[in-house]
Length: 168
Picture 1 (cartoon, rainbow, N blue to C red):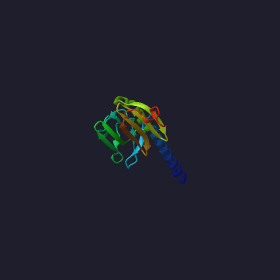
Picture 2 (picture 1 turned 120 degrees about the vertical axis):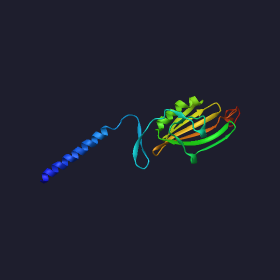
Picture 3 (picture 1 turned 30 degrees about the horizontal axis):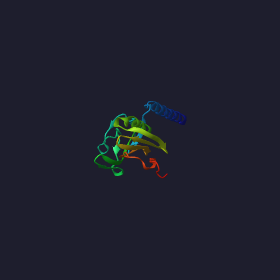
Picture 4 (picture 1 turned 90 degrees about the vertical axis):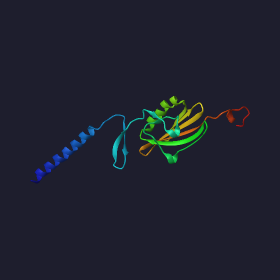
């Protein structure tokens, strides 16, 4: 009788293993990313940002959909046509996708990519506009991607070090 129970238990374990492997095979594949959300630990799909939106705090600078302002780590000062800003946004897209987003969308906002670098997990993109400069820093923080956008006026007049006879 014990041998009959052992065979039934072994068949049950095999059935569970086959069903588990079959369920894994049914999961969607592709280039989407899953992240943990909430306290339940459930996974959700995160798509690459495709559309640009405007945030009222930082008008004129495109923002990927799904990114929200972190108010306690952001500031904006403006006086007339001059503004200084450092605004942080967080969202679920991958940093590489967000970097690609800014390379594609800043041109439509009147900015030209001047320099790009990757430094210890952080993408840094420097843009020049007609009256402003913008630095975009993108990095992963936990399960989210952080985007810090710094905006400052474009310097007017000659730069001191470029003048003939200026000290070096």
